[in-house]
Image (cartoon, rainbow, N blue to C red):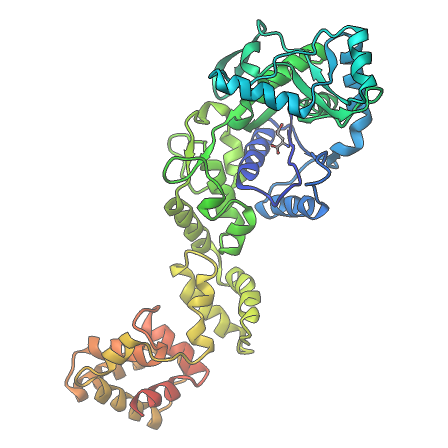
Length: 477
Ligand code: GLU
């Protein structure tokens, strides 16, 4: 059975790269009817925070990504990690390195000066017991390093990138697997070691993660071999790039799923878009889909090797598709808290709110557009410059005055739409202007601006709450 995992570090809020990795893992698990599990990689004690774990779990849930089994907490498994390190020490595959930070810096400076790539020069790989004792007598602490033979050949068949081949000499020398500690102890175990121990213990069959982990995969494969553990299959998803083709970073304004959420994107659109960041739909399939629909056809054959450029237009298009697909009821449910936050109280007449949602829905790209566009329905707006200019046109105010008179004699309850249309025509004739001028002027008077949704429906909604007459009167005053 396929078992995949997401292994987020709770050192920040749910990152877009992590969310995309989560989506690919989830899709693959669902496609294969396997299990998707979580491991919280909280071994960096200084930077890990419980509120980040909370944020990551909530963010995944928000995206519609559920997981099987209780999440594994990596820090609770430190005993197993230390056992694995002890095994490597016992087998002579790992050793203590006493080089001080000053010595290591000097080593790297010398490499730099000689135009060489920085690497650990394996200087303490073969210390005699006497040399070790001498270092200990100096009071030196030691890290533990795993031996990486320069001649080692590391090959794997990556589900995205095909045949991969690395040499031991590419990996920067013997790798630190435990932090510095007194020589009779094993210091805090480090990332590559713990990931291998945990993935094996959790029976992970496929490790699916971002391309930035490729060098780690090469190192981890050596650890699997050294520990005699069964190998999982690897798949490396392409990097997420910004519009200029560089790795997406904080400078691009959004890195966290929170940011997208705050901007008014829906979870469906984000999950849909995350899938498209690196995966291409099979021929004949629409780019707007649910995660379930994608899972039915998901496979790594359609995951691209090239970096995935972040395309705001596509995300906005998807979000609009999602919002346009919502019923007025659903939209009302989502918008009500945002309206309340602005201090607006909707009329007790729920059908008015539903009609407002039905009016605004088709023009929304972001959910917050449903706040901006609803504003003139809740708060009488100031007249903007474009509205003032419109109302200054010859005959505009005369037409409004004519309409006002008709309405004062015959108040409109907002239901007979044909009657309203006829009044617009009558007012145009009376003022000697085109009907278009009356319509634009009405929009200016009612909404305070020239942009807005369908005029008659707008007018009808305002008439129903008694807001049409005061607004018409105001622009004549
Ligand atoms: N904690 C690592 C990260 O968040 C996990 C990488 C992996 O999937 O092995 O990048």
